[in-house]
Length: 493
Image 1 (tube, rainbow, N blue to C red):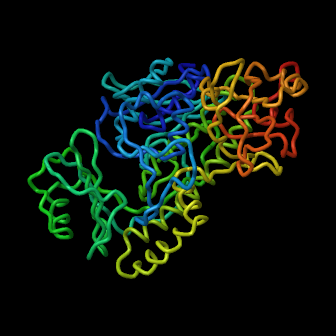
Image 2: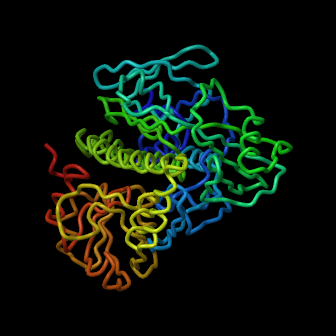
Image 3: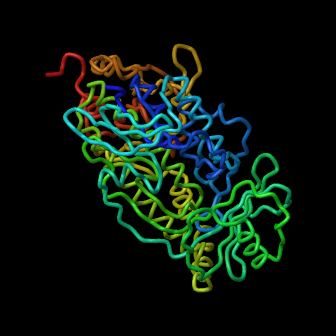
């Protein structure tokens, strides 16, 4: 084999997956058809969920200086994310180019083989692997790998080559975008509905302003490339009365509200992650953030299967968990599309929603949804509210040293966190010590209304989700360990 895994696409999903695989000791080759980084800002925000993921892998320091905000929106209706009480706030000024640079450096330092100027052509699945045909400056070559993962965007050639169904709806309208230098515009971070359309302004690092504009009732144009800046400037002036034609365009693009999702995320030895698996209106930057979290979910599972720790059926949970997340993503972005792009007929809907978000429960529900904090996986029944959810950042003391649950997960291994000095529990977990860190710790007393109140132990998957908790889980810890980490030492047949 040339590599255990070939990943197609060096965007956030592909680079995150490469890093996760290398963290677990799996060799990976990333193929990217572009010869160099585009430098395009693209997505400009990190949700709270992705901030937690990046902190969990020690990546936040690689992003440089960035601004955070407790404000967000749902379809242009402002939301106070502070109601979630999360450890992190969303980052609002991190261009996708910076995110990609940080992920590429991390994956590269871990030993990922990232090949730019290498275009995926086709593949064949046979026996215990796949043969991938690649085109580059010196011609074509083939690579052998155990698995192939498509992280190559909404027009994914991997998805098409593997015959994945991609049902959904076509775009009915579009929005125009331009990153500009040489203008000074008032920020409209959550967007603003004005006569005839919707406009948005965000300040980016380096003195750049991003403008987004969409006219009501205008169908999407058939384009073979990005729009001319003059088109964006004309629409902007028509709707706002402000002339930006003198500005220097750094990046110009257009996007629509098409909504599609792959019917399955795995077919044999081919898997999809990120925009290859789902496309939608990029409301609140959820697409890039969901893509990163797809790979965070897939990486440790694929590594466990490749190492022989877990059976191949573990990969089925990638589809069952992330396809449901993707389905919810498409539902909420379609709803936001109606709010953002709808004309006068959507005004009453926006007004009603603006009233509803004043209700704490509604505001908390929508804030969690767009932040990626509403996810709950099926890990077995029980009364603990932690089961299937990401463990909130938990400061703990281990052998006299202050640390946190977040820091304990940075190795990419599972963690059994014993908060009650339970020797019996630790002994029962010993057969999994080669892939799960068994940690005895003490934690500060949690408020009585906290999901951490009264918790004596939790089993964390490498992605930070709680697979078992005591008290409150209907499964015993050994059953949960075997489900997520495979048979223990001495238990394999």
